Length: 119
Image 1: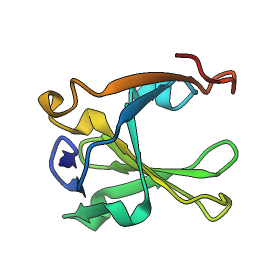
Image 2 (image 1 turned 45 degrees about the horizontal axis):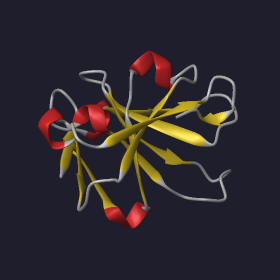
Image 3 (image 1 turned 180 degrees about the horizontal axis):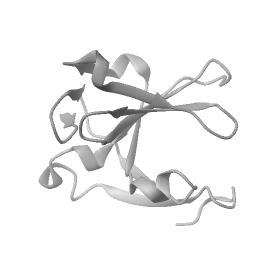
C-alpha cells in the first residue's frame, strides 16, 4: 500500500492495511482533515524525492512531529519525538487512493478535549 502527497514528492510504503483509522479533532488534525493509520516504525518506508521540499512541524507538548511536503502542502505522516516513550508512525490515509481504504472503520478521537475515543 502506498500513500503519496499531491505532487508525489513524498511517498510512504506500508505492507499492510490498518484495522482502523482515527479521525482526531485536535487543533491541528481538525485543520488538515487527516485520517490516521498507526504503524510501528519498522513497518513504514518513507521516500522523499526532493529533501529540500520536505518539512516538519511540532506544537503543544512537542511529542509529535508532523511531516509535510513544502511543494504541495500535504501533511503525509507524523512521527514521535524523543520526548515520547512509545515510538510509532501515523500515516495520513487521505494520501492513499480512496478505493483502497473506503472499507476501513474510522474511529473518532476527541483530541480537542483530551477525552479519548468517542465512537
